[in-house]
Each structure stands twice: as C-alpha cells, then as structure tokens.
Length: 144
Image (tube, rainbow, N blue to C red; front, side):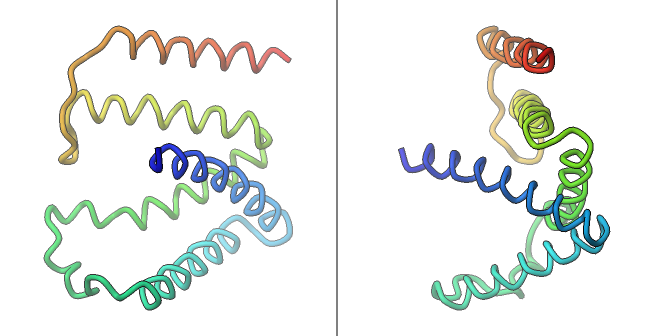
C-alpha cells in the first residue's frame, strides 16, 4: 500500500514540478531554470542525507558497478529539460500524458528484456493490451 501512495505522490509532484519549471523558464531560460532545479535538488538531497543518519558515504560511489548506472543525475538533467520544453509546447495535461505513456512503455520493455540488471519478466498479452488501451486513450484525450 505504501508503494502505491508514494507512486501517486511522485506523479503529482512531477506534474507540479513541471509546471513550476516551465514558469521559471519563461522568465529566464531553459538551461538556467534546469540548472537551478538540479542545484536545489542537490542541496535538498545533501540536507536530507545529513538529517536522516548519513547512511552510506559518497566514497562508496567509487565502488558502484556497472559504472553506467551512475549516469542517473545526467539523465535527470535531460529529463528536467525535456519536461520543461514539453510543458511549454503542449501544456501540462498533454505533456504529462505522453511522458507517463513513454515511461510505461519503456519500463515494460526494460522488464521484458531484463536490461540494466532488472529482473526479466515474461511477455503477457494483457500488459500489451493495457498499453494499447493507454495509447488509444491518448488519441481520445487529444481529440478534445
């Protein structure tokens, strides 16, 4: 149950963050706003690390294998950029609909093939049908 609540909260926060970032971009620029977003995220994460018991060390990052999984922060910068641009061009509802759809499809593909150390899952027609329904929903949503 806790995972469901956290997932819903994450989706809400992503949508609100996208709107905020888009508004900051209109008054600055996309890379200035994205830089500020990433810098404040760093400060919040370091602060949270200090106040929650300092589990782990930054030195342990040197031991992480495979090394490519450390690219999450760099990917995060491009996520911030693409969300800002999408929201500015499509508006919050359309951009989030497409973003979430792309997340679901790509996450399922990662699971199907067991990429990046994720446990491989079996193909299920019901999941493919669900994705097709989601894609149909995009067209219905776009019509109005």
